[in-house]
Image 1 (cartoon, rainbow, N blue to C red):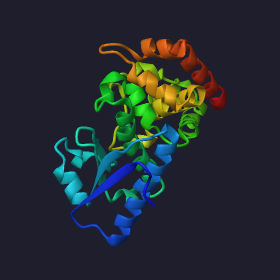
Image 2: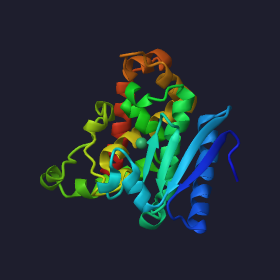
Image 3: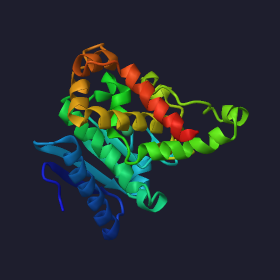
Length: 249
Ligand SMILES: [Zn+2]
């Protein structure tokens, strides 16, 4: 069942079984339908989905995901396209749908903000609005064992504390490694996803888009948030941190 406003255009590259093609289409349709509701989409958005077999995906991208073990999706905002390696369904069967929703969400949010390069406005909001269903739960589950090991062990693994998500200002600030785990299991991404999940509950999706839209050229999210919401985003983030810590104790 296709979504109401999001028009998916599917392309195929390489060998893709009919069964996998159907599963992929269903995943994108479902993601689109849910995203429309969540973000209040009310006008058409065209998104191209290029379904590819592993060889095409690993070999065909200019930025070279061939060496990224757990990279199965790439979005190209300029072409409003998601490249989807069909292997995602066999390698990460439990998470494929969530990952597809994340990548699709980038393009939906870009369209609502009216800027293809939302990544330059705020990396935190760019990744956080794409998000992940159940992010906070996943984040806490992942942090817990490391916390339980105590400081010495945790320090070795570099996760002694809950990081300030606003301090992650570009991809370079993310410590994840796509060879070790898919992005939705990387602690820094989960930190951002969880914090924006908290923000969405607090101010709602419409306001989030307003904040995103109103980040001025060379301006900051802090500034825009203050203007739109009349409160300090730093204070909100400390509340989020407190709630995470209480779940970790
Ligand atoms: Zn992303």
